[in-house]
Image (cartoon, rainbow, N blue to C red):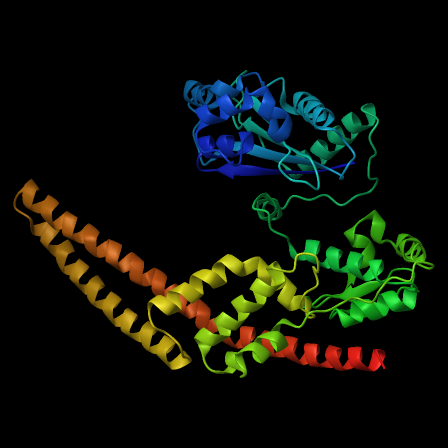
Length: 439
């Protein structure tokens, strides 16, 4: 069973080819040397060129565009084919990918097919093919039907290789999800599915499953005894049917999975309480002291989450589990506030006002330089003024970025505070519930 996706690539063709051949390498030549090392290939990836060789894919694709005079923003198309855990060997995965690409685009386009083995949970193929045909110079006309065609041919090849096919499965054409997975991250859907799996693993009856989901911060719109169980996920206004997460999440499969635990007496979910722990350690409500301490508390919570990988549900509120997807952003914002000595909301507002004044003054200076450039009497004098203008533009760009960062922190401050406060309240309630259960 393979899931598929397809999307346009704009910008640097070389960059996407480099990534497709090896996400850990930046030099195409290094990729070629690396891919040709058979001792490493089995452990990392396979690369195959169709109508080109891996070592000349970029040059051939570029030459095709130049030959037919076809240059625009769309430089290539990127496809994705991912298999269920344990369903294929690396060799099978690559063979299925190569055959799929040949049938779809092999008669008209240069293609690179790679199989990435650097994720432990599933093997997946990448297809990168030229946006211009080497046959007649016609540009690939991307349509919604191409997404369906990719799935259709992929399923056809999978069946020929004796692999399962997911009937009536939803089609995914979300490149942002791909990039999250590519960087080792989890989407909100991934986290909700993990939470459902955790709740099932700790349930001995349908009722205990529902209670575990409630304890983890979800609300049921329709319970497990309804034909189509659905839950409310924080941040979404409409309920989500559990079956939308895949064939293992239909009502029948959920009941079957829960029934497997009937005689095993699974332990209750062991929640950790990061906010309570942090308050106990610091002996005060640190997140109430100022905006910098709110961000510090949030990063402390993330640290506890990441140091307890065996307990994926560390915080109780789903919102907090979702928020860790933005860890890098929060780290940069915390470093920004520390570097600019911003600890309170008032200091943040003052920073924005002062930065805006400074930027306005630089913009006025740049306008004066523009007038000097127009009036310059010699080319040398004009180049001198242009150099001054570039320096001012660089300064303005830095200030504009700082203002945007500060405004983003300001706009999120209330939300982050409420999220931590809610997590604290849920932890206190769960702590009381644990005490009552142990009596």
